[in-house]
Figure 1 (tube, rainbow, N blue to C red):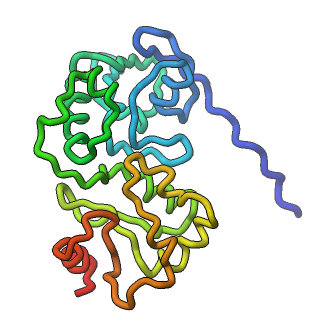
Figure 2 (figure 1 turned 45 degrees about the vertical axis):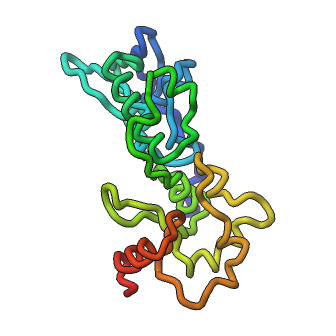
Length: 234
């Protein structure tokens, strides 16, 4: 008996909700962000790309949702649409959160969209500069894993010690193939341009001894030792 023919995935059932007072029709399986964008309602994002899975790290897409009598603040790129859900994208509380998020981002990256800073009254000098340029959005990690299927990039550490690392052995094996004369896909999705292509350009001429994981930024000796210690390479 032959296997049944595969069919295209059926669209989800219709879901009606309101966004900023507008009646919006979405489909089961969509997120609030997707429903809003399909309705032409803009919600700021930084770590979201339609082609990649939701991650919710930048928190810029926070919105307030009301289901029944309960109101909550949620990440719209992850929160699923629900029948009867009421969504507010620009409340005073949301504006306050976005202002703080933008100020924290500006401490790491000095090219945060000036229009967003102005819109939310954010002071880019509020917090001490720690300009790593990497804002830990994870787009490069997800691009490498989900689209390229290579897992050359990853995270190590938690909290303030969290950082993106490249695994040199995998980079030497895959990055040059991935580039193939074009911009590195991980660099294309990086909003700050911090991912270097050094492993694509010189993958086979890397030094003999590198830690299992290598930071994509802050490549000073102390951090290299810290990374090596975290991955058990020393």
